[in-house]
Length: 195
View 1: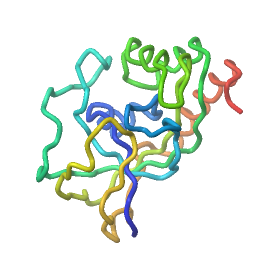
View 2: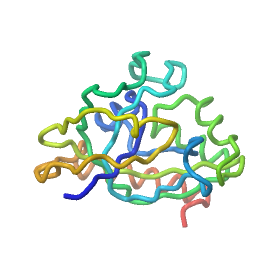
View 3: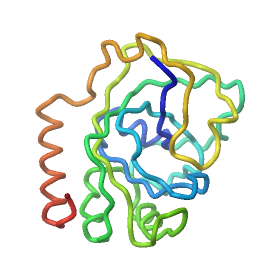
């Protein structure tokens, strides 16, 4: 396997994704996203847990451990891989609000992201992706490097072990995930925002 792309997300959200509690990602972007701004440019990626910016009030559930961001030499443990099945940009706040059952972010966190303007993104929009999460059979560990830091969503990790995705298992069974997907897509259709 070649160099591996990872999506940086708060540890508490990675935990929700790993448990099957959350199956969408909501993202506006960060200050280091580049001129074009954020997009779900990758459909397959590892989850990279971060502590950057995470505070307890930014999520409605889950345990936020207020810790310093990773430091060079810390051991990073990658446990999950994700496939994004689709991604859209939403521009209707009521539609975004209707996603509340599908994630753990606080309403204020989502509103702040929705209203933020910069790096190629207008105020009054947010990206959402439906993701299928798989747990690695064997966690992948490596040392943290400074290049993984900063307010950016996508990073390139070292070459993943050849066996990294072998025997990875979905965190939700087919029936549960299918029902969730249908419910989410129906809600978005009612908001007329799915292409």
